[in-house]
Image (cartoon, rainbow over all chains, first blue to last red; front, side):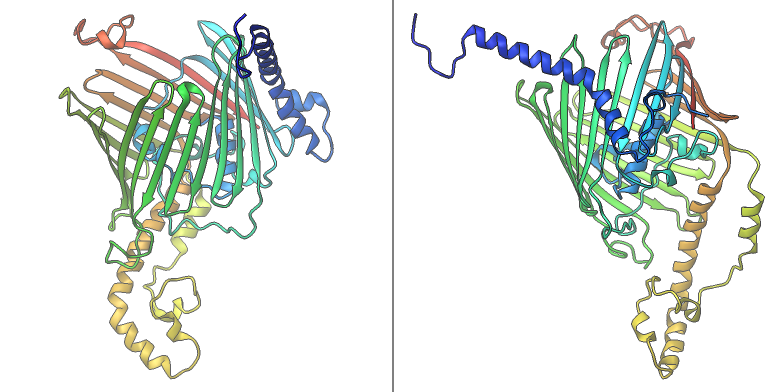
Length: 60
Length: 445
């Protein structure tokens, strides 16, 4: 097998990096809304319950 | 109609002293609002709520062939947004609907920078059933700078991340933009020429503004450049106090020249016209747009207060109590009674010009306050374009606690033909058919 310079990754590593990248994108994609909600929950002094935070419908 | 989440963002900008009109992105906002307004498609319902002091949420359902929905949340650590936000029952229609953008000259746009706090806004919106995510973070770094990150994430398609670094010093507004889409890099600048009270105007009271902006783009991956430049002039009629805006923009690469003229002809009507011309293809287009506001019952209390005000001419004695008023000889008034004679002389000398300034200023301010206090109930918008042969009609109004907008776009071009081939297959049967129709309902607490 020909000599490969150190900056050229093997196919296996490339696949692994792509997998990690895809996984982190999926986590960020589905985790963004819960993260925004968590920020709101954590910075509100009286810590509202989850339902009132999640519900877009106006509470009475 | 401005979405609730957009309103939260604008309130955040107002609260943190960010002037959105002083940006190249919004340099043509007035004519865009009047000519290219959005027509809702299908039936759309939006329910918005402020769930806690710092979080806002919106739930949207739309029925456009299939049922779609979206859920949006905003978190901000900026306090005091409730001064700028109101529920759909209490909001004024002129605040909920996009129309003529009143440009405040930078030297009049005062914002206290002493108590500046670094604040941020986090926004997320998930669309169903496609589960596409819109994410945005706005971070105010210092009184002049803000960082905006926007992301459109989709698991099925390519995701796009765009970063904006914006620096607004009042006189200049600069933006550096980088986007992952084709490796796009951009730079936008807007420069205001009238930075002081009287530079171009002979009058001491100067309410006009002249701005020149430019943008440059370069796609790193496809090595394609783009640029454009725009000049904007806004002023008020000295007699009536009515504002008008003129813009002239030029795209040197495509040879496209576009000029617009928008004027608020009365407190309840705005007219805008736009002429596009292409230097290479010699194609042109003329567009017209207007909006007409209908007001309900006026607030009697406000009216009475207005009529009770005495219409007295300005005098130096009266103005001496207000150091904010920009009198040239204000420093002479400090102290001794010896200066009384000098003051009297000055009063005689400057009385006509002072009277003129006061007249001009009170005209403009009265007009602006009448607009702010007007109780509009509905607005009709019409826009047409001679080349596209279309007519857009939109009605926006308040009914009980709902903000409603309903509109249609009529056109006589065939609907299933792509835009490029409209010229060839022109079927000028003269009948306008609805290409789009929609109703949008908004409710917010």
